[in-house]
Amino acid sequence: MASIKAHEADRALARLDPAYRLVLIYGPDAGLVRERADALIASGVDDPNDPFSLVKLDGDELSAEPSRLVDEAMTVPLFGGRRAIRVRAGSRSFAGGIETLSEMDVRDCRIVIEAGELRPESPLRKVCEKAKTAVAIGCYPDTERDLARLMEEELRIANLRIAQDARAALMSFLGGDRQASRNELRKLTLYAHGKGEVTLDDVMAVVADASELKLDPIVDGAFAGRPDIVESEFAKAMIAGTYPGVIISAAQRQAAWLHKSALAIADGQPASAVLDGGFPRLHFSRKPAVETALRNFSPARLATIIEQLATAALDTRKQSTLAAAIAQRTLMAIAANAKRRG
Image (cartoon, rainbow, N blue to C red; front, side):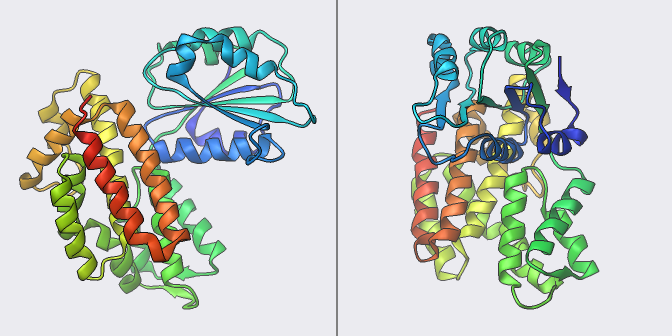
């Protein structure tokens, strides 16, 4: 039986006991869940880009055919080598397949399961915490110490220092989602490349811009299912010279908060209480759009959108000449998806 505490997770994952063939990574911080899953996959297979080495499965599909997970785990690669299976949990349980697999002699195969926030009585969490060959790791929003460590890591990689006032301001803009925080830090270090030290002006020019009210109509329009607003407001932002990645970062923060709020509402908390405790700097004028977004999207769909936005954030950096098109297409897709409801 293994359940690793949040503050011990990074150290444990760096030296994961080979006896743990199944790893459940869950929690409200979707960015941290994904980051840790990526690291486990990278260390668990010889080539993560080889489709014979890495198999990706959908948890909802496995619920209808749990034996498929067992079959995949017991498959012996034609050319040998280590394999991994990456499962993205949805709303349906496939704990039966995990329980069966935990009792089998699986060789050279790591099974990584990603999930949102799970209660202690969740079947998936219970079976992984009970099995001797499995480990469960919770991923929760970064503390101030976590954020400081993350900041130092990215600054060290970029060979940069940061002024004290800039550090204090930067800390106030980070948190909620690990991947969004890391994206903001990398964008900042790219902006300050060659300067030696990150200043307060750098932080306000790059990171703080994502919190300004001029981006709210774009983000709110996307989650409220208003592609017309997204199109018109996005065009204004481009004319104003706003970097498209900044808009995606703002959408990532909003998606992370909506996901957390949707889970709270599903857990029985009144929507009014969730909104009153709401998103930082949530102006009263935004509440109708946010309420619409919470009606439009379930926690599971919001988790998918968080992943979609993370991909868009990466693509805007890799393909800077197409950044505007990538960002607009992603936000328009979210707006169109909102009309499906559920």
